[in-house]
Length: 147
Length: 147
Image (tube, rainbow over all chains, first blue to last red; front, side):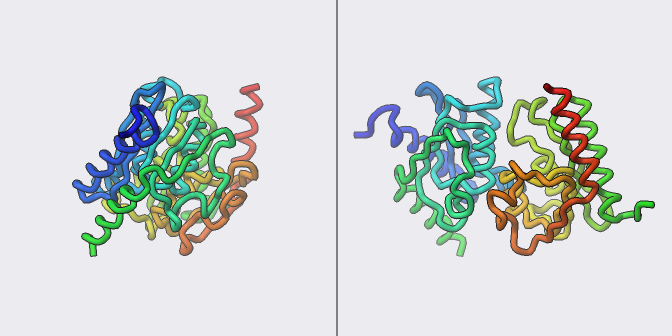
């Protein structure tokens, strides 16, 4: 059983966003932002639909969460995302001073840890590998279908 | 005399955007995107106004230019920006595969070169230090007034 309001619980919500991206022909990455056990933002990758490389799930989730919070900083928030953030997203998460990041599948090629392991705010806690297999499989399925 | 359509010429246009940011109480960074000697996007930092850490000048310029070009990739474009891009913006410029980046003042603290010198696309040409003094002075003036 999945613990309510635990990391797996919220990663499932991010995964549901990733599935929406998949169904729209987008690279299937999803994210949610949680504050006080409440989801305050949901987003999935929309780079193709919006014709915009900046429309990663995390970027939209940050913008949306800040909009709801009425402040730019997300210190008390946790971002759940199905894939390890890229440099762009890590940089944005650093500016937002997000309290905690939980990611699903690692991204050895494009993930921030390879290129700039200290990209995040020093106070940001990072947890990786939550529902890693499901998240990675969805990505693999997407690229398999593309070929 | 400034050479028409040279790097200084377009940096002046980016600088004019930075001045607009300054006048709005925003950290004064401006950017333009040029394709075939034509400015196809102009933007300045709007993080305070939009309450959004992702609203850097470069990010908006990329989105706007892609919108106009009708394609996500900006291989044939040059981005002029008054300050060395941060990691977030460098990551976005990498995804956009921008052809050339010309920046004004270096940013030894937050600039991408300190944190991840290879953040950009390998084919992206980089020129730094164009109108560096004016760009840096505007930043210094902004932070002097803030104190």
